Image (cartoon, rainbow, N blue to C red; front, side, top):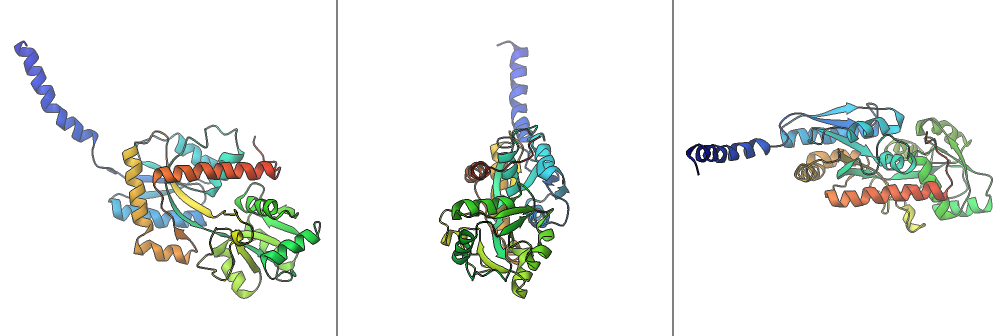
Length: 324
């Protein structure tokens, strides 16, 4: 080897370790954006901020919550799908993302595969509540009542294609009953009509219904998780009467497509640490939620199962959604 070539080889070899160090600088080395598919103040936003605070404390960099509402959450999902896969833009998504992926094929991005599942964060059941005047003291009696009067009863939801709508439609399919669907602009808008008896049933989150349940303004008949909720231990799960029914509301963290496996695994480990911390456990319980961290491969399987389930519900219930 000539002297000049030998010198170049020595210089290149001495620089290689430095380049490797630069390429593997600790993550995160700067603030991380956490996109939320809703406006500030809602349930998803509150849960996201709980996790963002814990992750900031654990990882030594701010996790900055950025609310990106509109278009049923698809604007935030699209921004995440197009973000750089460097771990500095993440999304705090929820059940709605699976509903969108199942029902909106004309989106500008692949809603199923463009999001990289990192870990579930938390989940909580919906609760089926009815007007107290309904002559049914439990879920079995309610199903029998609906079968006996197939054209008499109605239910409200947060809108066509919402999680509360699809939860009710799956109940109808499994229970083999009929109810008229009346969509509203949110479950809060349903409450006056539910309490006055103009509509008869509603699926909603446990936290917003807890006060109504305690005051006797509505009667809870079942929760949509596979097991009973510790917040409503006296209320049976839907699966106790309708085997196979399991439809909790969940939240989780996603990354852009192509994000390095090392970053995804690191984030998943930190989310697990945050979710199971004493600081967060109590807050989640107050919210009616439970920690539900998952490894990336487990969450990926769950994500695809959820999309498939919602596709099945939409198809079997013959639901027509705006896919334009």
